[in-house]
Image (tube, rainbow, N blue to C red):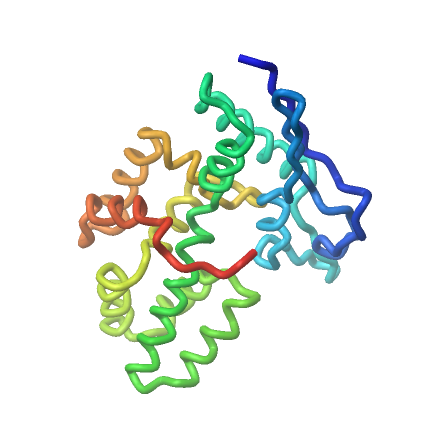
Length: 235
């Protein structure tokens, strides 16, 4: 196979952007094969630019992920895609596989889960709670909001919410909970690349059976496998 070269780099040909209070050039990816080169925006730079990845410090300042960690995550996925393609490599197929395998499953399942939450509380004739969810999740981690709901909602209402979510919503809650159990800030994501590993699926199954014993783990796994079908907000 012809040599494939790649790099993740800060694109100083573009304007600097705000990255959790710091100005920086956007992160891009460059891949070269058979004397042809493609350039595209880093998925993880866009992902980790979201406000949910900012940590507010006691002095009021904000800290975000280190760029080195994001570059490392990018390169990990790039290497994985190249190894997976082996002798069938092409730049077009690489870009498609990269776009698929780099996706954060917590991110791609969140939008439809938020929609479910909005409709759940709206149907309960709690329109202000529905609006809180609609606007609050623009800045807050949806999972964190659910954990607070668990503390303040009546147990019967919270249990009904979880049961209906299992039937009507993507498995965002279970995925995020599992991810939080296995990852450390700031790299709080669970990529399709990681889900491609049967060991990850097995660990998820065990986690769900322990923490969500009333839910069928096989159904949740099937829901996760259907992640490309969920709607999601543009990065």
